[in-house]
Image (cartoon, one colour):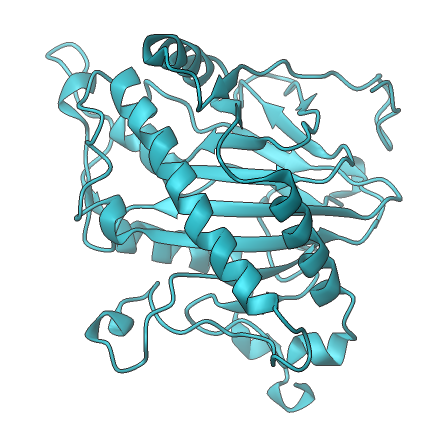
Length: 337
């Protein structure tokens, strides 16, 4: 793993993360390892999660098929107002302060919870119909992604139960109908084309950011790129690479969980640096239902440690964060699609 970081003077620093085995019968050990990770870095690996490596390889293969399409075909699948579909290179600016208004050198594809157009739930900001490639264009593509979406949610719920126990809550705290029972779960395929990252010029595969929601599951290929910064207030910031681990998910905590836990658990700053290699990853963002009120947990506040954030609805918080980080759709000439 002694690969020289592109445009970094110092040799790359590797992060050592805890590994949570979801098949471990000793739940107390899993809770202890997870809690340690959440207090330290907000990142950890999850293994023996139930999704086969063969199926994960299939999802990556289908992702490559999509991104290998000509740009004009991908633009026909351009994301809509509900953030479903294709996002071109430079569509997203995650770190406006340091990215010099350039944007991320990655392309992506959003797939959310599929809700029929005539269902009243489809009126909610993050529910509705997905944008799917024509079956003749990518046979079996939709079925593969829908299966991944379903299996990943089951893994996320299993992780959320351990997180609840680590916060001295009932294991089912997050797994309720008004939380993850009607979750806003979003799959995002990501492709970094190999544009050389150069932090000194504000060029990143993905700018420094923390995720918006509860937790994120991330599957990666074997190309190094993801970095984390455990202390965002440090001067200078220290960035560590997260080594890929075959068959595992990298899990990180989101801003909503940091708010819920009153900053007991960390939503850690992370970014992606790319060398001249293509890189693929699959992110699965898990948030509670639209109307869930995110407010300080009873186990995370006291007279000497009052709530640091006001309560906020999940849909209100998410809508603003998406608006702040994505280009306005009016910038794309629809006639080109």
